[in-house]
Amino acid sequence: MNAFPLLAALVLAPAAAALIASRARSDEGARRAALAGAALTLLLALAPLALSCAGVALASGGPALPLLGVRLHLGVDGYTTGLLPLLGFVLLALLAAGPRAALDRRAAAALLATASAILAVFCAADLAVLAAGWIAALVPGARLIGKARAEDPLLRRTCRIFLVGGTAPLVLAFGAVAVIAARRGAALPFDVEEIARVGVPEAWQPPLFALLVVAVLMRMAAVPFHGWLPVLLERGPLGVTLLLAEMPVGLCVLLRVAVPLLPAACAEDMPILAVLGLISALHGAVLALVQTDLRRLLGYLVASQKGLVLLGLATLNAQSVSGALLQSVASSIAITGLAMVIGAIEARAGTADTRALGGLVARTPRMAAFFFLLACAAIGMPGALSFVGEDLLLHGVLHVHPVLAVLALTAAAINGITLFRAFQQVFLGPLARHLKGAAVEALLLRERAFLLGMVALTVTLGVAPSRLLALHEPTVERVLHAAFGGAGGAPHEARSSGLAAREGAAQSR
Image (cartoon, rainbow, N blue to C red; front, side, top):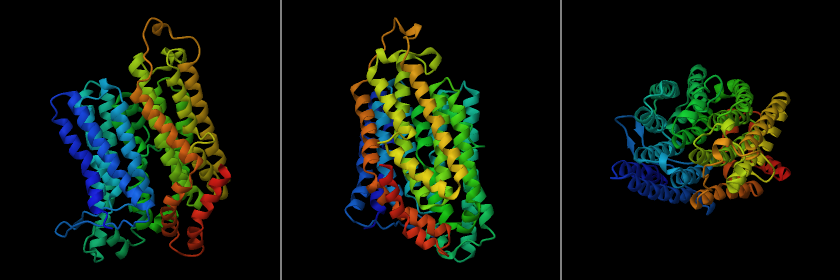
């Protein structure tokens, strides 16, 4: 079955809803249009997953534009098939359960436009389409910050650095790859399949890989390109920043472009990425521990989690890669839920500063329960998907780099201390003085529904991760085979990846 019509409709649905929302006469009308668009997006996003589970193969495809050397080539693999409904669910949750005061016409349209661009990245099998989605995902948030927060120079400066630093290296790398492919006879030099057919000379692979890695590290908020994320999460629009931070577009570029097209550089330089991932995990964990603002704390926590994912992928071990993919999904679910709880706290208490909070469990026990459960899900407590992901990831790293595995476990432990300490400061103890005479509302029904859905999703996938592992298995095999060039023991490693990952998951449970 040709996947192009379905995937094109999926990418365009939130974009069309964003256009309608931006032209609505009132904020309420914009929210209704946005909710309808998000619901349609989720339904369309579930279709590839349902077809995959039914055994229907989705062939990538799309019309070619020979004059531009571009093909509107869309396709999904096992990993991105699962990411599509995840993004649809997160988008619907942010629009339906987010604070109404922060969701005007511009914010609703920005969320939908950002989601549309990220979907394009997930589905793109052409470098030009991927670059367009990568850049377009950054524009709505930048415009929203420029219009609504013009008085904050630090935020605007950080946004510009993120916009330029995260796009320029990627565009340069893609342009160079296309030129090389054209000179080697590719009819469509931006098409990933065409580039893979003609190949990229090994002499060119290290500099191109370095450019791609800079863009990916910027997007994953890895050291030394991490500074934008805490600032944007603390001062910027929470919903748009959360989509940019938690949807693993950088990981997709590594999996779908860097590894298959630049395998020699990938195999040689991945150890450097593993070290950078570990440094990011430890750096983010330590800095999150000393934060007093919940939103800024969340920024460093996300950076730490992404560092662990990068470490697992860069280890290029069957279990570590499977664990990294699982952990990226688990982190997106749990961190989004935590961000929604933090947004609810800020909307009710007027602040996200832990020094001005305390004792909220007496006023909002359900909010406290959701924060605690989602914190457990974020740090890998048994029963959660992140427990399986972290266990596979750490076991895989342990086989190759035992010292790195111990340090990664330390970072995960610090993240646990950070979240439980934040829970204690916000919800336990005496009620904060300025809240004693104020009415702190309980969670609304729509907030409870989506938070409960996130808890249920992470527990369901954590108790029975085999379906998700099976969905990711072709991606893991392709990554290992491409990275090792199909030589030596790599094919056996690739063929045994699914079995090893499933055995590790069974041991985790």
